Length: 118
Image 1 (cartoon, rainbow, N blue to C red):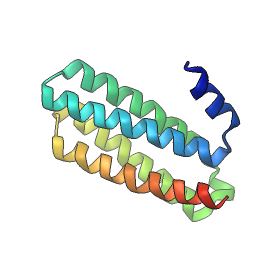
Image 2 (image 1 turned 60 degrees about the vertical axis):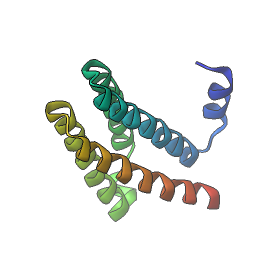
Image 3 (image 1 turned 30 degrees about the vertical axis):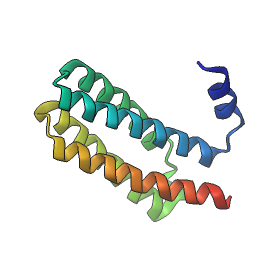
Image 4 (image 1 turned 180 degrees about the vertical axis):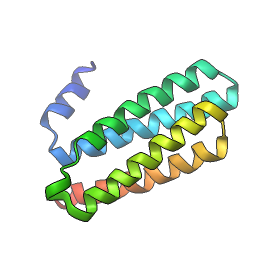
């Protein structure tokens, strides 16, 4: 791991870590889109698989009792992302992937705003 990135992760607040995960998720989804447009099936599948692992980490970190409606909404969001990613692997649909990127970007921006206020 890059020493700068390692330090950034180690010194980040929990909310900043969530933002970092969303940033990586976006990079992977954009790479999958690029791979899809270039016809690189293996790279598309690898990027989506890595993105799925990030979504699973985010989903697994939800505290459903303390998080209330927000946690339930995020759980639904993560399930929709996973379903969409599966469709992209199965069908190679650019529009689904572009929609996933847009959705992740919007939620990442919301987390970044929360992070700036914490």
